Length: 265
Image: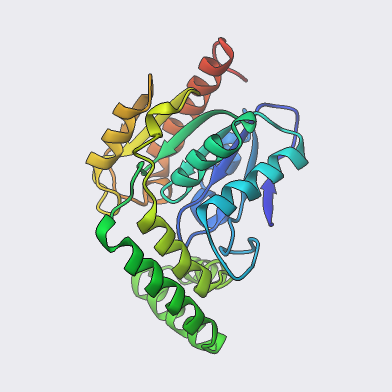
């Protein structure tokens, strides 16, 4: 597992990126800013970027990977920050390994992400089949398709080349499995059991994870605090001037509530 680690003896914030992203793509405006007050650990998740490879992707495996990482680094318990797909993984990390989680900050995410529950088995079957098919496609085809997609939406050549390089490290077959896993994910039966301080950052103009799902998450988790950012799903990058200060405040508040103290740093 590839990990960006600011090191140091400060309290640790574990940053979990979104689907098809990497730690660098999701958190590049965030990591150095947070490192002024925190030890920041930002891994590439399974199948993404330089993350762990294998024949399958499950959100539960990602949570177990992270528990192993936190224990290896001897930084537990940590504040877990989950963005989009990172939100379900953070929730599962708390549920499966509560000893490593002091609190959570959940951003642009929900207890159930968009998708129809009645279609979940079919989506999973198609996703697994498609992932095996994709794994047989020559890698050059993946890179060509990715290049066309990124260049079409980014007119900065240097930035586009960096994004293409980062995204090109991911395993396309595992990304398809990850999409199916997210479609299946539903924590609503147990999300109200969360017993660590939590802050939900709601992206109010989000068209990927509808704001009503995010508000529902904030209302369901006991004593959760919330903050809002009037931006879409890519607020962590496109509105970093608003997002990063809001995230820093949320981490301080969450850590303080977890330890009965005021601001750290």
